[in-house]
Length: 443
Image (cartoon, rainbow, N blue to C red; front, side):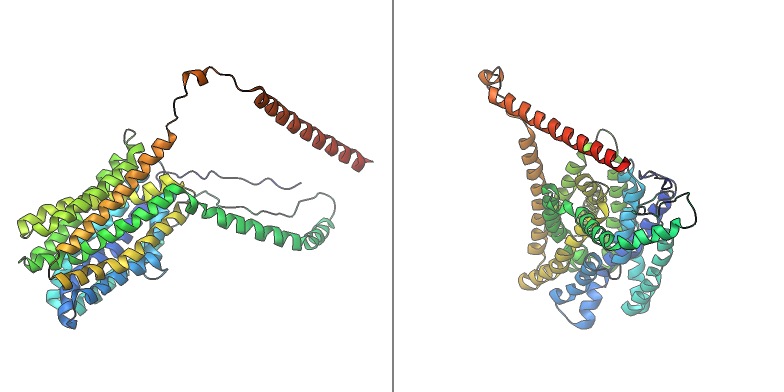
């Protein structure tokens, strides 16, 4: 008889080493997303040194963002796996865990923005980049914190050698049986693996995920240029370099508050089923902020903008993994997050250069910021319309009074009875065939 195997539970522990995973993801977001945001502080330095226009200079930031989301290169090797690991360790407190982990982007921006400006002034932009490169090496420490869920088994061997009690010849016979059926095993295992790999990505055909994916494209297009052009825009309206860097710091620290508060609030029982609504509300509010940005042309007016935009940016960034998990389920979260962040890549690549081209063409930032705002509002409205349409389909139509009391036609009952009888007869035939086979084997 084959030895029994222990099957472990696959439910997330919601604590324990999971908090170390959260800390690791927190540090990863500092070393990746916060450093990427701070590249906007280098924008004017690059533009001045290389004597290029806005559109060409913007490619530096857009390529960094695109490579992070599109390839398995650079920051992508740390960022996406770290986020997926948090989802493996948390279920009940998933939104709070993601809020803490993703707040690294905000606190990193808050700390690094003035530090980067100081480094540029002291060591030029080349020396500042070298120091940032040394700081990013801390990703190696973050990777050391990542480990599989303790006491869990992701898979087990599909085939084993059966243990028999009769004599030493049993292993040889088992080996011969194994060798004889190995071609069949290879074919079966290949089909099984192909089926499993397809099932891992069957969420791509889900209507809710398709709508979420399209909305992510517009959301990513709208949010990316602002982090590139906030500092240059502030400098163009007469704000000093230190004040412009301070705007990024404000945006970063308020981003943390948005991460944690929205994560905590949407984990409450009263709001847990409204995570989707909270996400689209946060995206829409960021879009409105972008629409009002062209009329804010002084430091005292740009400070409230940084507060508002930073808060709702942290809110929806926290809810992206949570909403994705609600749509596709925890089992497919890693693959679905990979697709979602992959979809960020294309807008991240093209939106900053397009916005820069609009600045070069029009001579101001108005058109660029309006396009960003309308893009994010469209993303929010798309999700809202999809949710309303889904609720409308689920609402059952009220039957007429005459139809409510009507009995089903007799042919329907007969068809049902016939179907049930046919199934019972089929099962009876299968049982009789099995008994006959056992009797013949005993003889």
